[in-house]
Length: 268
Image (cartoon, rainbow, N blue to C red; front, side, top):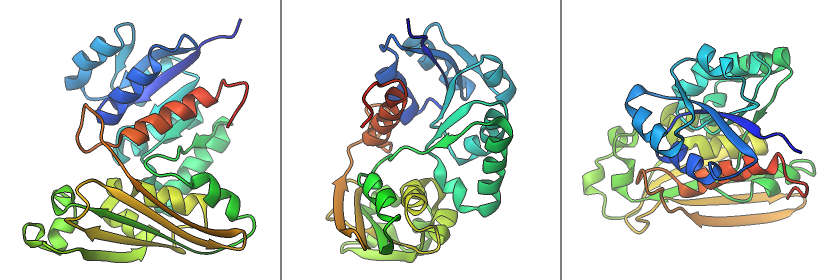
């Protein structure tokens, strides 16, 4: 009889709570702990009544999970990532904009080597990551990530300091640069760009365009790639989670799929 996969999770916001709902009914998965802020304790008890609430890496590691899912924030990954990996526990992480910082990236790689563990990055809010990661072996000439969303969806981000969002009535590109530059400025908003960069040709060769566009009321992602193996153009418009109108439902589903894939007999 196959043992249940013991899960520890960091974060229980819109994405974290949705992931838990998707995975909690699976008999092959057992949630042993959730690390998050205390005000989310009641939400955890409602969804995962038998799961322990913890507030620091040491307490999370003590519950002995087989896998830790990070769906919290950049600061959460910085706090929990290295201790979890050093403890020999695999980590599935979505706040990958952190890895645009070479020092942070090397720190997590060193921790994984010390613990003989690994960091897995799910596709998140976009598609085509499998194509990008395969194409790099034949050679990628150029790749650009473009995101267009309504001006209001850029509120409370550095975009608000770059232009007056309340006066945008036509599409405006307010940032163009490398994935590395963008991830450091926009952090949580450019986890997708970081994923594309790591799947493909790196942070400095991946181009990013950010648009405030009234014609796109939802977050719409575009990936344009030219490679020796062929070209790719993807457009994907995301819906949001019921729990949080700013969190991608596809990101939560990608995490759930990555977890379920670990025990699948046929892996796709």
